[in-house]
Length: 250
Image (cartoon, rainbow, N blue to C red; front, top):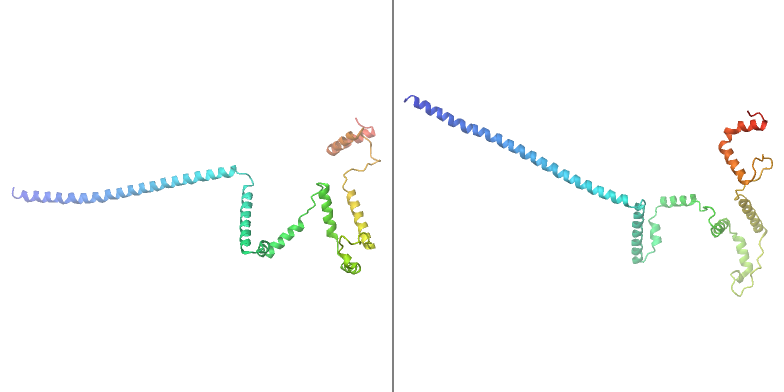
């Protein structure tokens, strides 16, 4: 019994030493698992937050797109135009406050390249859009005729010397009706009138009547119908028509 007692004490001490070691091994394992679990939960929370944020942004974009679709087609151009007008008004007010001329200030901001490009656009643009009314046609003709005028400075100075003070007439002047045009001026006027007559003759779209053409109609309306039929089906019925004219049609 005395010999077995130290052995029992040794075994009990051994078990006591193993229990703290096992507990020490279990604690790091549990802490590592808890850390992994917290990391996964944190990642899930971040993903959940990102999903909610993406959903919110997507909803905002859908609302904005719906607003844009409901706007008129030229809304962007109108908006840009209004912003430009507001900026122009602001610049005009600033120039007026400084006592400057807005047109001169605006011209100083235009580059040479922009000015040349605008001039080229003006030259390419055709102001004659066709007949819209007698007043517009008369005004366009007046503009065209005045652009063709080439001032004769020698004749101008000569008339100025001959007329004296009456060159700039007043209500008391008697120079009205005394001017006699030169032969060159009359020739230019005649040439221009002839050009106008020639141009006016081309305005009419009436087709000249051909006396040698075959008469295959009974009235004007039937003639127009036959011309349309010939234009669309003439190449398909040419052989049949020739056979009928020769009398060899079957």
